Image (cartoon, helix red, strand yellow):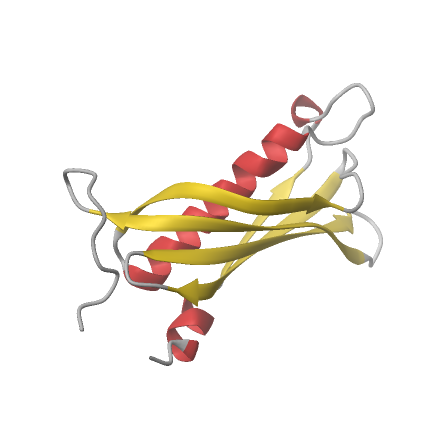
Length: 129
């Protein structure tokens, strides 16, 4: 099935400020905090796409290309890239913007696989055929 319209409509954008309480001794964002935010955006994207309850079952790969400095803005963008029977894959990219300059670069990306579940935590079909 072609889900392109639904994929476009469920694309999720979240903006955050990198405050000092989210940074390490190098004054860059903790990797664990980055992964937490990415997982949250993947969940929101999957939920907006299918309007089902989801859990994360795996993360294929997260590439940290550049550190995320304190006192910057980050944009997380989630987009569905694969739809199966009970699971889907969401790509999440993070872009960094300087607060007082007009610059934007992609610094992190990763893929998350989520499974739709029922009230008993059992996998269910994302869409009925």
